Image (spheres, rainbow, N blue to C red):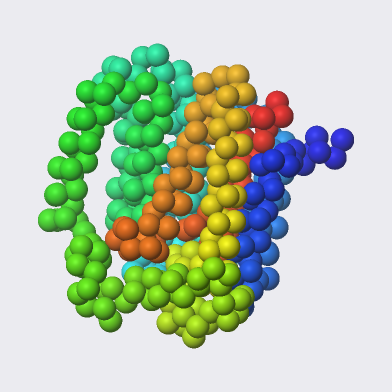
Length: 353
């Protein structure tokens, strides 16, 4: 009876709990334990709410997905008007004792509306008109996010769109055309859209030995932190790069480097095992789903998580240019956590339906 209400799947939540615990271990040593605990409790409340909402209403009533999407777009417009500039980005509503990052909920809205749209057209996706319509859904929020500018969220939303098209049966010819368009837009973006600091990050990535105290400072400190962790780490609260503030954004963008320094290869191995188990269980859910919408929604969530993990870790180890993206379930913050647990709630309802 209790589990019928909470809808907790042990095999799904065990790796999530371990991931949350790894994040709390690092955040506790940095003085943000109770703040993150508060975010987790709020996120779990949203999980319970959405786990008990019949997911079929999202599948059967298009206007619900459209309304959620429009609210997401409106929030991105309002944050550009009223949001303060934080770390060079106008991406948060600041309410004093807490802030909200609307783009995280826009990702949920995008997965929802694309799953609904593609679920009814998966056998007809070869027609370019359907590809164009699906792109219109992602185009507007991408433009608004680019104006913030938040390059990381832009990449995630485009990745969600392209990933869902591919699993829906996108023709290889159209896939190549989309990639060509990305290259053209990327070139134009470099010339006319990207800020100087964003260009410098990419240039520094291509030439990592250049400017070690400037644009490459974050990367250099992250690599030092990761390498110094060795097998078992220095211990929670004993990482010199993390605790002495040499490593910037140790609670957020570079929490992977903090984890590696303080828990070593052991902690990173636990992280990867948990991520593997999480994706494995979500993949099993897609096989059990009895309709296209449910399957696409779960896959959309998996794509989002995968992009975030790949980019965050890639940045931390120097394989990718520095882009601000959260490491799922570890990074300090409430917006991404609540949005992820809302989607997990819907997925739980799909599983227990």
